[in-house]
Amino acid sequence: MILDIVQAGDPVLRRPARPLVAGEIDTPFVQELIASMRQTMYAAPGVGLAAPQVGEGLQVLVMEDGPQSMGTMSPARCQELDRRPLPFTVLVNPVVEPIGDDVVEFFEGCLSVTGYSGLVRRWRAVRVHALDHTGRAVEMDLAGWPARIVQHESDHLAGALYVDRMDPRSYTTNANLGRFWKARPPAEVRETIGAGTDLWPALRSR
Ligand code: ZN
Image: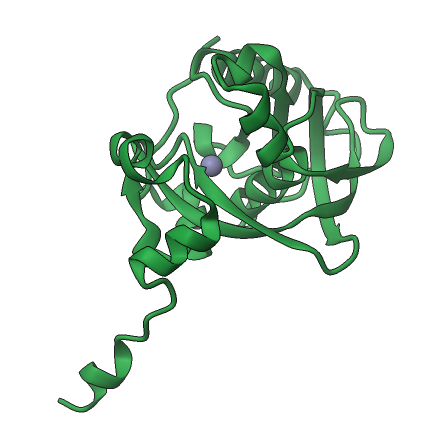
């Protein structure tokens, strides 16, 4: 079943999601939730979806990336973003930790913040500990765009949105992202928009 994706402002997106307990993953409710999240992600279309985005405050996420999602993106652009095939993956109760110190910055959007994007810094590579759709413990190392996807979706489970992490001055409609920013290196975008400008001193002096 294709589910409605809730939008920013819905309290469910701000509540930390509850971990699933042993034996709960096998229940029809959770298995149907996973199947519906998969269908909903494909229909959106998107490369990741977390349960709070469909109104369920549970620590479940799904993700998948591949040629069907990369669409008309050029090979050069795919390489720049470090997009690589990510088979359909279900993660329950995921814990994400960085591998190394490398940080990468790209524009990122969210199905719960429809129509907008912003520059977000993420770990380039991460290790994930979780349970799979059968409740089995899994560990996986992800790098590049898949690492970004799992960081984004795990944030949802903690009640966080990418807008909490983005440089707020980079916030853009997707139309303007394509028109002005997408083709430019993130460092050049930062320079142009005055990323990191501190507005508080001016406000504090009032
Ligand atoms: Zn999202």
